[in-house]
Every structure is written in structure tokens, then in C-alpha cells.
Image (cartoon, rainbow, N blue to C red; front, top):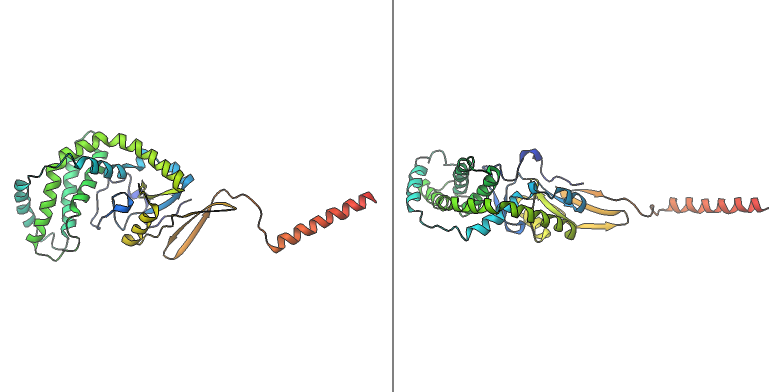
Length: 289
């Protein structure tokens, strides 16, 4: 049994990153496999039994979007963005009124994501394209400030267009490479998911997606720091089987699996057992006499 950490319904994300980043700030979590999450995400620790039933190709897209983005970026590094920057700078300046309350990070992610939607709608694998493109946008736009809402518009636009254009000029190459490697990545990552479930006693899942973290505690600590998600990833064994504990807002819920073993050893139980033994001895003596 697993315990949800936030109140957002799991149905909100039908497919990992197919829903593009919202206006909420998405943070890159390097301790959690380099994925991007927001405070509205759901995160949970699933112990081994539940964990293994969740490891599937549909639960590793977010991890593969990150893995293929990192792998493909080395071979897709076009740097000429002058023409693009000039065009986008003009367009951004015309939108100063509408972006006055937004940070350059929000504007960059929003504009970049809109381009993803347009591009991916005509691809053969729109879902994989959308997942990869969204990850690429979040990664590239992470260089933009998250707290410059009140900055001068032209200064803000310069940051937005610089990063947006780097993403744009590399997009065709990057997405083609990512999609080409996406299926193999999913197969391999499902295996990694199962191995993690077995070797580490479980795994962390956010928005239904496997978090490919090499250190579960480090990932849980970063989730707590960035979003106040309090997840206990320690799996403790006792005489009743495996116990998993997940904490939220100082309230702790403990779930036990495979309840078996010796009955409770309390004073009432010991007394009842002793009286039963005496009764058996007396009955035997009466039959012999």
C-alpha cells in the first residue's frame, strides 16, 4: 500500500510529461535523476511488491526524456542564434504588458512549450516527442531567472530569447535523436526500475513516473527541501513482515504487509496459555485415574 503526498488527483497526468509545465515553477532535481517537478506534483514511495507492479514502459517516459536529452545534447549543439534572437526579441518586447507579472523562466518555458505542441502534433510519435520536448524546454529555460518578475521588460526578454533560441535551433536534431532512442531507453529503464525495487526495497514515483534516483534518501531529501514532500524511504522489517512509513505534515501512516509470525506476547496471552496447559494436565490425570 502506498500513501499519496499531495492532494492533486493522479488522473491529472495521463502520461508523464505529456502535460507541459504549468505557470508553477518547475525545478530540476539532480538527486532525483534530473527530472523537473512542481509543488503540484504527487510523489510517493512504493515498497517492493507495489513497486514492481508499477514498473512499466508507461511509467518511465519522464526518466527517458531526461536520459535521451542528456545523451543527444552532445551531438546537437548548433550555436548560431543571432537571427532567431533578433526576431524573438522584437516579439517579446511587444508582449511586455502581458508578461509584466511573470518571471523570465515562466515566459521561456511557456513560449518554448507552445512551440513543442505545434511541432509534435505532426510527428509519428507525438507522445514521446511531447515528453522529450517538454524536458528540453525546462532544462534550457532553467538558466532564466525565477524571480525577476519586476525586472525591466527588455532585460527580461533578452534572457528569454537567448535561451529560447538555443532550444529552437537545436530542436529538430535533438528531438529526432531522442525519439530514435526512446523505445530502447524505456525497455532498459523498466529493467532498472525492477532492479531498484528489488535491491533497494522500493522506489520513488512522482506523478506515476519512476524516479531513477541512484540514492533514494538523497532524492527524498531534495523533495523535502524544494517542495516540503516528506517521504520515508526506509523499509523496516519486523516479525509481522515489511513495514513502510510515509509522513506528511507531521502525521505518520504505517502500513504492514505479509502479516505472519508469532502472536502478540502480552501478559494476558501468557496467562491464558498457562491456564490452558494446566487444564490439559489435569484432564489427562483424571483419565488415567
